[in-house]
Length: 472
Image (cartoon, rainbow, N blue to C red; front, side, top):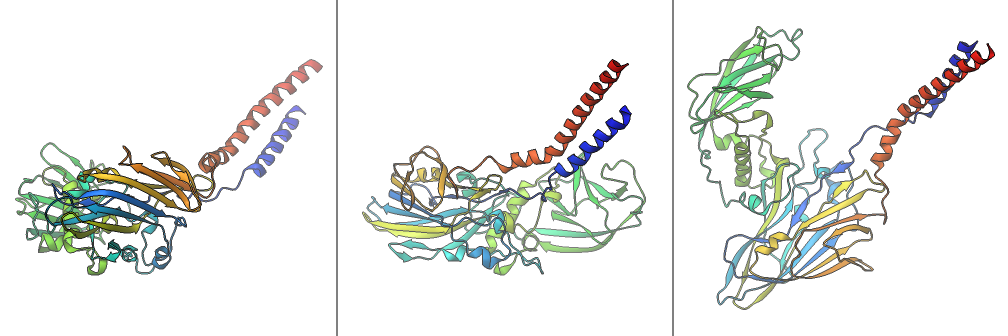
């Protein structure tokens, strides 16, 4: 009788727990990366131009969506920042200066492509904005430099990537010969060895030869070289790019049962084709002429990526390299100004501004970053006025000192602050505890229920046993 009562009680608790477990939605991204902007930067040293005042106006009438489905929809987003400078030339000669205005990578939510062709839309919103001098638009050039996903803007590092033409590199040059070796695998029992791997050992003089293997997905450093590895796929060829002088020995391919490359298996690798191109032709394999990216900017970005992927014994990390670097580019405006002796001009630059989105809060919060420290490179810097025109609430800011106005928030500074300009906006004044924490409680709820069931079950069994003993 006791066992039946316990069994019935447990069954009842299990039924209750089944109905108490909440239905969970599919997991979704809760953090989106925006862009970091900076003020205008002058190219060159010893420029006498002084900044008498700077006025920053952020217009945030709407928040960006977390997902955009086509370019037209994305282009309708209106968030922007205008930096207005009053420049003064104290010198007794006319100053011609080249200026650049970095406004970051494309945000996460701005990477769009055609759903049918999967072709990316690279011309996003840069044509919507202008650069003005004394109220009249002037000519500007859109520039691009390599900037990896998630990188923050660094003045010296990123400025060093801007070149007037093809960069002078210690190893790479546009006309350098590249031998492309096309290899096709066969004879591998893929039904038995699902993770079959092809590999060869490379040992080259990196001052004369670099090797980039397309199709590589792993590798390791050996005592006298490096082992370059790739999954076996008869439908896709391995492409071994030999940059510079030819290899003294052709690759000796071996086949292994998996990526550990310990047990060899049967297989054959055939050199299907050989092609000789220049380095310039190689780096332009994925370049699109209508992309809006200057040819030398594209070349410089790919070569910079090659330098970053330098490995050992002449090898590059092929698994981390892509010829299509369109989603790894930082965007700049470049333009020229002329100021006569003792004269002033008012220069304004308008560019898109994209916040980081943290959707783990309810409602989501939007964080904006604008770098002020690069302005310290000017000969003199006067006052800074910041205006944030928005209907939303500013929940955090730095530096402190924003005042609430009918149009948004204002701040006046005598000179540059020590830190950068950051602020967070939200549709409510007090966003709630991150939804993630509540979501974790929801996820853990079923386990908590079963834990409680177990504890209660043990207690009930103990009480029933004691009751039965007392009756005896």
